Amino acid sequence: MIEGVFNKSTYLRKAKISVKAAVSALLIALAVVLPQTVHIAGGAAGGAKWLPMYLPVLIGGCLLGRKWGLGVGVLSPVVSFVITAAAGNAMPAAERLPLMIAELTVFAAVTGSFSDKIAETPAAAFPAVFIAQITGRAVYVAVAALFGGLTSSAVTAALETVRTGLIGLAVQALLVPVIVVVSGKLIAAESKRK
Image (cartoon, rainbow, N blue to C red; front, side, top):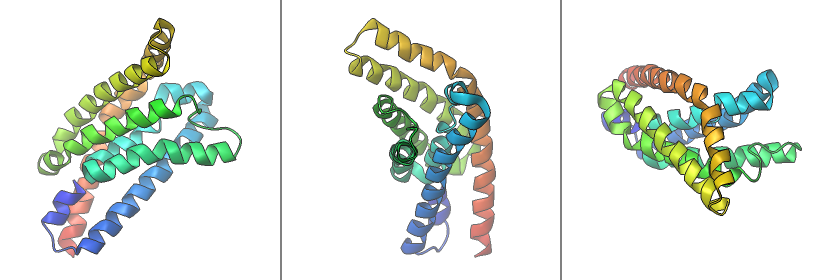
């Protein structure tokens, strides 16, 4: 979406990269802070239920496109893990880190694939997020099965994780497109002023 706005304006390449880098850094920081906030308010169960790290990644894919969104998707769980591990309570946990990287990368890739369409028709953010969520959760289960040696207990645990997070996914399926549409309008208005 941001790229679509840039293509319609006279921004210099360096300015485009600076804006995308700043938005990416902000979203990655949000992907670290939101889970901490949810865990403080609702405990570990709150994180599993509301999936707070997913929100900035889905927004990143929609706004930044596939390439920059992928950066947000890959780096969010890694940066969160490094910072929180240094503080003594790694989130996501080391055993879940590969699953989260795979899942959030898919979230970003799928929503990023819709970015140009979202720039033209902001309502396209709704199916983009929904498709990303289904695809990402399927990848999560598949990677869990592979890391678990294709055992039924690994698949059962992954499916239980998916079930626990359904409310968070539902809220984000509504919230993310609204945030993307409002952000797009703000970005478009700002680009017209320049």
